[in-house]
Length: 242
Image (cartoon, rainbow, N blue to C red; front, side, top):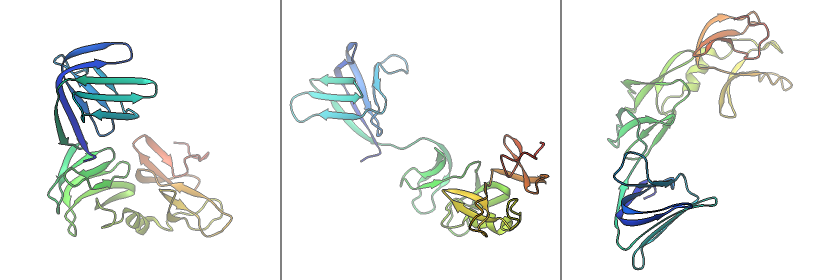
């Protein structure tokens, strides 16, 4: 069970590089190998290692031992007897709906919408808003995204492509400032670009920012209203006076 939190509780000796503790504590081992030792006081652990390089648990013989190592640091927990529990776990996020197939709760966390039960992950593009409305085809929530205009598409890109929606609206809408041909909407190196692919020698390409087209720049390219202000499609444009 890779996505699980392991908990050990008992009268333990806890050794760090510079101190030794003894008490009835709870030791938590998270899926990313973070180890936390908690006693009854406050929220801060007595000892911890964040994302340890290795965590070794010894339960085969008499007693209990746990050793976590990170570079040259070591955390060691030992006990004569221990109680052990394993809990299925996931990231905690803002609930945004229910998966139509698994029935699991969908949460928004770490730039994606994740099914808490099944672990299915739907990456979100920058600036996306997850809506209460659902897709008529698959039942997943829809999302609203500003990419020159406002688009509402399914969360699952395999069901409804945001790229296709932006391409249908803006493909050939603008002219390449270097060769004069139309800019095409292309995906390259994981980014959605307005780029020139008409001439082999022209490598002009501009990332489509998260925002709305509100004006024209004196260079002929569109001006976008973004979260940080107005800017030309060409982020290095020397003719943009906004």
